[in-house]
Image (cartoon, rainbow, N blue to C red; front, side, top):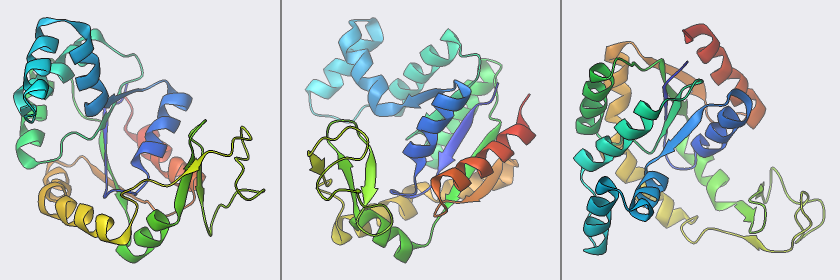
Length: 218
């Protein structure tokens, strides 16, 4: 069993690699957004707390998010968990460490997906997805075989995210460098940090991550 965090700026490919780990290793992806939506719909005591906060238009506290994570971890997952979108700050990293210690679990690895900002900008502003099946394409590196048509499902509903623009990416990178990038030093100090080339081909990045996990597994 391996519990891991994927670290890296927006567009580094964390979501793609998380999906591969779910498919290939049976790990459970703990997405903060998904957990909040599921909790709100569940009607549980924690769900009612989430709903009250979200209905007021307020941000859900770290305490609530940690509570949701604890519920998921306590339910168990044989192959381990991938933390997606959490922690984002040093305070959240401390809270996660306390939770894992309390329930007798640990992090196996924190994997930093290194990227070059200029290359990342080219990647993000050129990408588009199929609105039907979610397949990801790129204007330069992975265009569709038939213009305007998904290679996988044949749909013509190809979309670009509204925030996949140069200005939006620069703002998101600034937020990442201010709040989340300090976690790289934090996890280096704890001895949990490993780095992979986030701008490599999907298969190459997946192989690097597998190498880390196979070396760190229980």
